[in-house]
Image (cartoon, rainbow, N blue to C red):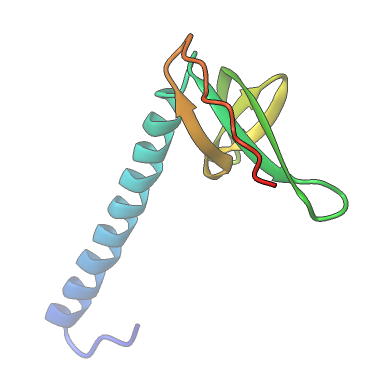
Length: 101
């Protein structure tokens, strides 16, 4: 920032305050989104040691904030919200995947 006059300085301060407020709102929205998964069955995916995608299904047992980011617990393991691939209403059975030969 290199303001030339008071008006430009105030405009830059207002822009910075707006960006900060938008960042906080985004964080709060993501947290609310994560808490919406409580008790629902989800499919989460992660990479194993060989770089292969491994998926797991189970109910969301709890939601925590870790360093400001929401994480869901499925079958006792923490996953980021971005690792949720599917969501099912409680008690809904997923259709079986057919294997093509």
